Image (cartoon, rainbow, N blue to C red; front, top):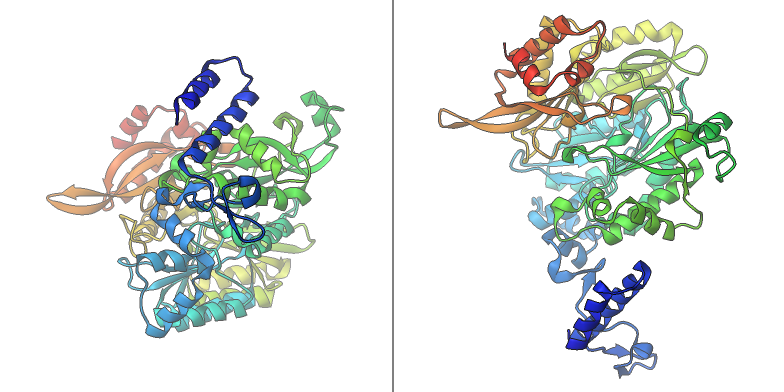
Length: 605
């Protein structure tokens, strides 16, 4: 930059300019500086070269950029996307399938755009992750997935914390056939991994819940299909989670998502109480309250964005926010590339201003006090028998320990859904499922059938509150066998401790926190510790997390507890809690009213 530009920049920094003038002049100076560094060379309409920007369009002498970031500054994964769009790797998949060849690092990244994960060294095979919008499956689809698991996998499937299904132990030669067969079931895996909008979740009891404010399934499905049909929404800096919550009995964990839509009611009374009656464009009705930047692995729950939107605007608002993230998120450092970091850098107001530029309708800001929040969700409402809003019908929440099902169990669940219900199945973010539309006369029959196949429906059973990520048996990042340890802990505690209130115990294998250990009553993060010169499995113990009305990030209580010692420690913690709680106090409330030092002393004695 020459001396005149330096002097002008100093005046802008010090001088009497409005913020708008400063912003304009800063942009002008940046453009002039860049022009000085990169002389203009363009092409006129006649095809001749020119140095006049007014005639020549883009500067062909400028350095290339990707979403505004110079290519040489991109991280490795972003350079791969710059060279070839993530969805354009189909020929690579075909070639690997024909050669029965596992992908290298670059193609491992690319294949995740089609929901195929090479999970070595944990397993020398691939994992398939589906997209199941709103967690809605038909019995026929569940049976079809069981067939896929038998023919191409290990005869099992797992329900994920995004109301989704994963199948493991797939060989490269079967990749294409698996994707084709999946499409034949009316499902897809496109965009199920890496830097994409992940499976769209919604209230599992949507449409059947007596207490819901809104059936959110149409909006979840609409956003799912909008994403499938727009390539630019597959080109994000990092993953992006969206949830729709209709105010029903089962918590959808919308406050753990990058973007959450929470149904609320606005009444004349609530508008008057908040002091905004007659001053806004909002009339009484049901709306979505928008939450942004939930990322529990970074100890942050979503914050209220201050805006209220009619439900029919939700897909447009989601698409606009995702596009703002795509254009402005960090593409140089994957550790700081989630939406949270863009909003931290800009501030919420600017993020909403940039979103507004993408929309043809105004974003209306309304204080939270003008809204009537839905009733709190039922604690462990995803387990047990509950009445539907449809007379004489029920849904049954089935405990699937840590989400694992054999293909035989999947087929049996599909048969129960078909023979005694409507053939509809709902997956939940708690790694279990609901059988819906069960007539009163068949409830006991279905319950007996569940027990016979190895599942159950009891909300106070410890096994019903277990959540576990894949763990070291199937993920290279995990330090511990989370699913194996979770089941062992659940069985140990079920035989020794009798709970009268439900509670959640979350096992996650690494700092990525796929099982969201910071929001569990008890959260466990897998680590390695050295014992007598050997590396062994252990856990950091977190307590007091929660979502919804009990929202909060848990506090780390213990570090490096050996996996072999964990069952006895958790038993002691629960016994102390039951002995010292006040009345019917929950475990979360009990831990939150004590300092960490007090808890450590109580639980260690």
